[in-house]
Image 1: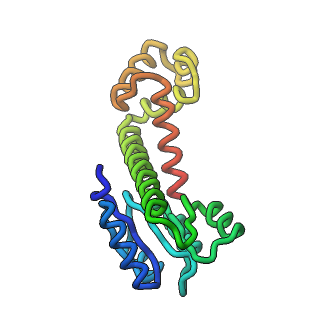
Image 2 (image 1 turned 60 degrees about the vertical axis):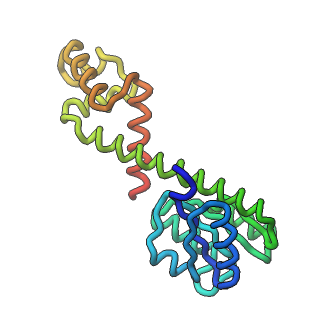
Length: 208
């Protein structure tokens, strides 16, 4: 994946600033979309991979509120905040709200490009992790009811004999089910099964 395949969403109510940032980021090799307001960005339905570069102080929805709304809408895009009125409390609120970085105007071109590149890398990792969670969920959904029982007990750490007692069958039968579970989930070891289970739990919590 190259920087040209992922999008930097620039949000600023000042048209001159938007144009300046577009020129700079275009020159650095990034794909850029500009938005005159946070409302416009949210209406566009941004999706990963990508990141958001937004001013803090804007009419209507400001940068911090935009950050909160992206999180509430389960749009896990990394956000870099910009402001000409930086202070410690604002920076702390931004980081607690989940901002990846906080730039005080005027900032250097190198500082901006570096912050955007880090945000895009984080966005790519988040997108890849989301894809892995979806794949894990789909694989687990393909298990038979008995295989799912065996899977659940395996990731709880129960040995074969204990699983056999819990399910009222023989250890040999459990070994057969275990082999099928490992094959269907493309797992080579018990730790891999545990990671799959944890991934699906994360996905389920994020959807609540």
